[in-house]
Each structure stands twice: as structure tokens, then as C-alpha cells.
Length: 198
Image (tube, rainbow, N blue to C red; front, side, top):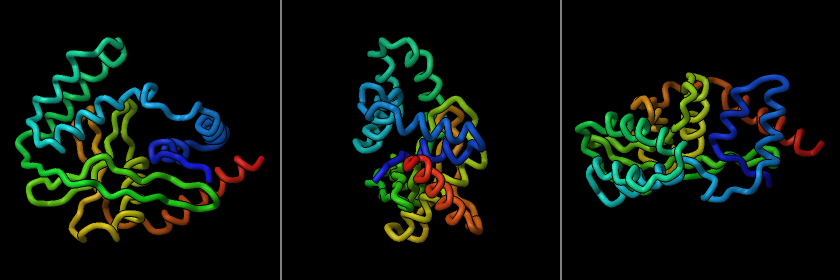
């Protein structure tokens, strides 16, 4: 079964026409994942470890000390600033986030929020968005809808499913259910599956 990350799937769905097919091909033909090529992996792991170990937000600045990669050195400070601004004075307690897959037509999308945080008494499952490219409503809707679709049964009814625009320090949570969105996303996976079989 072909597996896609939630980020890759949202990128594919957000495109149309020839660029959509090009994006599918680039994702499928991309070299197998390795942590060394995951640009935001150290920052993502740093955020997770900070919460898991119940450390203060200032701990994230330690990530900047050992940066030798110039691209990371120019991107990480903005992301850390945005994240710590969002954190503010919130009381947060870590819990292990639920994860699942959205599977249709022989293609599986990993639905794996990085953070499980009780924020001021309310549990949140949060997907982190690090890119400089603006986080559009369409991307928010797709990501949060899949989180609700796949993870709701594993969580309390009050759990908030959300995506965090890290750089801008803005949290976007799932709104009212979007009619027929699950069917539309299933059709997108059928399209991807068809391209894979060509």
C-alpha cells in the first residue's frame, strides 16, 4: 500500500490540473524518508521533547546554539519565536497524541498530530505547520477534517483538533463538519491510486 504523509496529501489536494499530477509524481518518486533530510525534524522533536519533559518554553532556544546549517539558522529563530509567542502564559500538560490512517483505494494517509496538550484544561491534538507558505483555509479544513474523521473515536468529545501555524503563532481548530469532504478526499485518493497504476 502506498503511504503518504498528511502534509504531502494536503499539498496534493490543494493543487489542480497538471500541477497536481506533477506533485503526486514528485512525492512518489522522492527518495525514501530519512531523518537527515527532514529539515524541521530537530525543531519538531525539540518542541515535543520540551512539552513531554515539562520544560519551560525558553528550552527551545537551546536548539539555536548548535545550528550549523545556514538555512536552518535563518528559519528556526522565526519558528521558535512564533511558537513561544503562541505558548505565551498558557498552562500546558503533555499527553501522547492519538494517530491513525485514512485509507482508500490502496493509498493510506498518516494522520499523526505531533502534539497532545491539555491547554488551560482542554485537551488538544495539534498538527504543526512550519512552512513559510501561507496556511490557507483549504489546507486547514483538509487537515483538521481528517483529524476529526480518523481520531475522534480515540479521544474525548471535548478534544480540540487543530493545526498550528508555527511561524505566525496562530492555532486553527476544526469548525463545523464540511458536508461531503470525506467523499471528496476519498476521490482524491482514487486519483492518486490511478496515477500509481499507470
